[in-house]
Image 1 (cartoon, helix red, strand yellow):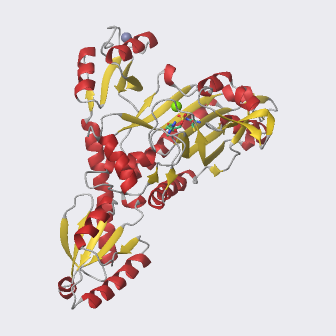
Image 2: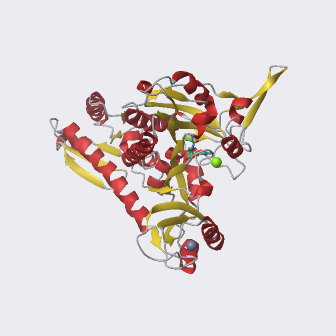
Length: 468
Ligand SMILES: Nc1ncnc2c1ncn2[C@@H]1O[C@H](COS(=O)(=O)NC(=O)[C@@H](N)CS)[C@@H](O)[C@H]1O
Ligand SMILES: [Mg+2]
Ligand SMILES: [Zn+2]
């Protein structure tokens, strides 16, 4: 959809997800519908993290000298940091940064918290707003200046194996989270020149939006001992020695909500996985003069029964045309609509309309199996949304044997191109130059074949794409 950007902005407004009229560029207001989707998505994520992470909350402001301690890190962020310079009318003697991410807020405290090897590993996360003065084109939920839903995890380990195992664990956590949302992704190791400032290496999750551009929806960084040395985070070993710790951090943001909306959405509007839908079921009674009260009574009982079963259900008994109701709930992406008229009650039938396929189906209304039947359909919708998204994603990963081919794929189809690469930075830069898009990173080792650019033995299978 070349007009994806217009579709995206329209649906954010029409479905009342966020209000972009707030008078600061790149900072927006979560409206009730959007806030609920965000809340349900976060509860899925927290359920996974709370297995073996502790949730914490650090101050938003970071003293200038702490931020500056890690030279590479601060270099990477110096153009993006917002500063607080005054307390009221009084100039502060020390500028305070609004956290762009929280390494330099947390790690001075980690130096105080970590004492012995028995304290390790430590795994923390927080869900906070962070601030980045993005100079590239800002876009709601995709590239914002206040990242309102920044989940950042920070872990501390006694040795490098611990850290590298945690990187793998974080990749599992993100995969499971995105799988529950039906968001497809590819994981690559970012090139040296595009890793997180201060990290040894960065693993990134990229998905694909309908306009053929990839979106980085999560990153996992192995920080090695770099920050430990800078912030003097050491622990006493069993032998009484002092060792620097090894660390990882991994983050995701509002981009997850952008992906749910952009990937599952269609020309009728939002198309929400039941797990994050503010309403999972909407009941629309078919009202005629004579039988209206009987139908309403039946629908109210039905709503109570569904609600008691823990599903988020709404009875739309407004006195407006049914068609207007259907349009509105489809636009808001409600996964399942039940249409109940006097004859359905008589025949013990129920009309169900799935949002994912927009198909109408008449099913038996069976008191005993009703909740089970509804949950089965909702489960089916979840699975169908995920399958369709993955099929479309995989259809848009194309191999290129030559640079020319790579360039043509990007020009004609966009999407993701896979190619053989020697892994040399200079060669990689020339490839980006020629195809005029970014190398996402390395997907896997290559066992044979020649580099697409220089003809040397290929070391890995790499991906490139036009990115947000
Ligand atoms: N301006 C932005 N708007 C929305 N999301 C963003 C923005 N900048 C980064 N993100 C998201 O935030 C994730 C984590 O950001 S990051 O810089 O890669 N990594 C960190 O900040 C590390 N401290 C891990 S928590 C990115 O993968 C990306 O999905
Ligand atoms: Mg950035
Ligand atoms: Zn090469």
